[in-house]
Structure formats: structure tokens, C-alpha cells
Image (cartoon, rainbow, N blue to C red):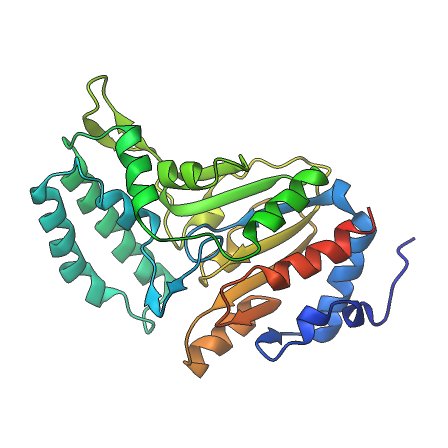
Length: 287
């Protein structure tokens, strides 16, 4: 029988900070009780990468995402770089908060298809990509390394589901070795790009991806920074309890309300993993 604490939230000071919004206190309390009772053995982590595991802002400026990091690789041609700017000018204005998720998905799909055509024939090596990652200042969130070390200590698996570039994600997280589901480059023997792996992972179709999880792990913590991330674990049939933590940047109260409707916990204008780590310590300290 589950031993229920009526006020388990009182044990997590980080959840009572001014920049943390809880959608439903009673529901969160129930979920935390289930996760604590299940301990490490039943827990898994499903996380986005760009602006979730990484910082979204450094020194007041947005950080480059994994695809932008890839595009900075020195071996890519001027034709490719100019083409990326043209695609941004074409599709960027079509990404509007007034559009439905289905409409946005169509925009992203066409954008990606055109980008794949543009990329085909370019030459690149894994070393080129790694050098691009090292030269760009897109750091992991403060406390992210602590999070991975804590999860490794308790043998809690991590799945990273990214609409970005898999090679960048793998290299950035090389010390932690999570399972990465993303878009990986297909190359021929000479290093010429043929395209990308299928199915394409994009912002609003992550819930359609096959996520490898152990059946016994029926509890999950989901971490993301977009509304599409909030549903990315919904297709995993064995998960019974999902605690969803979302990161929100900005002052738009209408958009913030959408996040609060989609995530159990919303962390506002914060570049750390402090809230996630506080929740993890609550669960894993009982293991």
C-alpha cells in the first residue's frame, strides 16, 4: 500500500520559489508520493535537449541550438550557409503562436525537408562537428552535470529526445551517455552528406517516436521547454505516472498560461536544474 504524505511538497523548498509555478498542488503532491514510493527502480527520465539540458540564454543573448551549431561547422559551404538564411527568412515568419500544433508541424516538416535538400552533397566529418560544438558557447544548465551524476549513481536511465542534430547532442552529453533519439546525419564513405535519419524528429511529433524504456519503469519525469515537449512521452504505454517539468523564458502571460496548462511544474526565467534536482533528491534519497 502506498504511504501517502498529505504535504510532501513541504519537503521541497525549491518548489516554493517565486519563479516556480505549480499547476495543481494536490495533483503534484499525489504524483510525488507515487514517485517517492517507486524509488529509483521504477523511475526514468525523458528530456528534450536544446534550451532544456542546455542554457537558452547566456550573457543576455539566446544560445545557438544544435542545428545552428552544426551550421557553423567550417567545412560547410557558403552556398549552404546562404541557403540556411534564405530558409529562415522563408519559414521563420510562418512560425506563429496563433497557429495550431498541426499547422506548425506542417511548417516545420517543410522547413526540414528543404533543409535536407540543401544539406545533401555537403562534406563534413564528425571531427568538424565536434570542433563546432567546442567553439560555440552553448553550455549545459547549471546543475545539469549534478543531475546526470545523481541519476547514474542510482542507475536511472535517461532518454533524450531532440528535434536538433543527434551528433551534436551525443558529443555534448558524451560524459553521461544517455539514449539519444534525434536526427542523425547519413553520409557516404567519402563524408558526403546524403540526408538524415528517418523518421524526422521535430518539435511537435516527438510523441510519435518510439522511446525505448524498461517495462518495470512505470514512473517518469519529463523535462522540456516547448509545448510539444509536454506530450513527448504520451505514447509510452507502460508509463503510469508522468511528472512534467517545463522551462519558460519571457514575460508573455498568455503563453505562460499555456505552459501552466501543459506542465505540472513551470520554471520561469531560470537557467539552472535546481528545481529538477530538488525533485530528484526527494525521490532518490528514499532509494
